[in-house]
Image 1 (cartoon, one colour):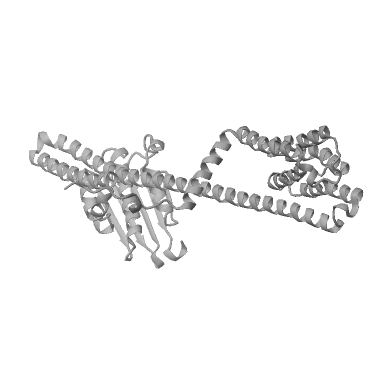
Image 2 (tube, helix red, strand yellow; image 1 turned 135 degrees about the horizontal axis):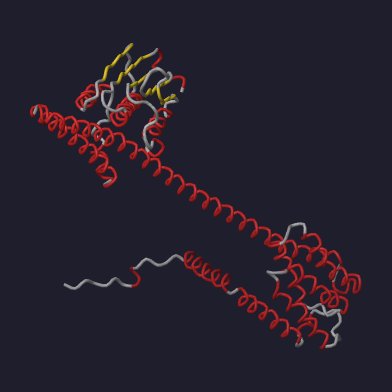
Length: 418
């Protein structure tokens, strides 16, 4: 069975307001592209209307119907042609048309085209500083005052003429001010929307940069440490291969374990980057804590670096603080494996103070001096970034003479002092 086409009356009709808005937007877009076309059309319409009135209709309302036709024609053109500049130079257009309006009132022609000055007043209220309205209203009122002074009550009572004229001027001004207020308010809203959009984009870029920095820091801590351990195990296994094959096999087993652990953690980080839907699953792997310190030290000792630990006090730290302390120890020991040289030893002194404060000192007996290319790496900057998150301080540098080696000192203040 073939599908039945819906009848025209079954289709949702476009609302009239949306149709009008769409047409209005198109007209405004065309006017922005070709403003002269619209100005010529509007001016041509009023010129044509004024010329038709000058053919004889003006005598129906004139104070003096015997005004020469040539003068009426010239006045009609002088009152309508300046409308071409109503949007670009409304004040100048009003000044140009003023002599014709005064002559029209003085001669008694009282041309209806003089009412087009209200359109110029509207554009002055719309585009020029509002203080300009005072002299604009005074100018357009002058011809009415001239007609009242010259012809008196023959054209009606003076208060009726002035009242109706001022009312017309007030309506033109009010419309201009209203449209101007709405336009300015719309521009403010659009500018605010643009700024909010820009700020939103900036926040997204900052968040993305912070996330990249966090991931780079995590990858440095994980991969850098594990590769250093693997390098130490490989060097030890090479020396042990000739004398003790069993020790070499143990070194190879440790290399495999360490590399698999590093590979697993790397995959977890890459999962977060690759697929947002898998973020929850990736986060199931917990971040290391101080309870994992023994495993870290076992790997370091297996790589050939003797490490002693001293712990003073006891406290339960939040996960974020534990991760910071753990990563600082990890980075310090990694640098020792890389730069301290053979026969170096390390000592970890961890002290839990009152109120949740923590003091950590990691020292080694290596060659001392700054690590090679320290400014190019992320080790020390990463430790300082982690420490600053909790308002702590980090000092790293060679141990004072005559001692040899490197010293890293971390202190995290009380949680309430942050």
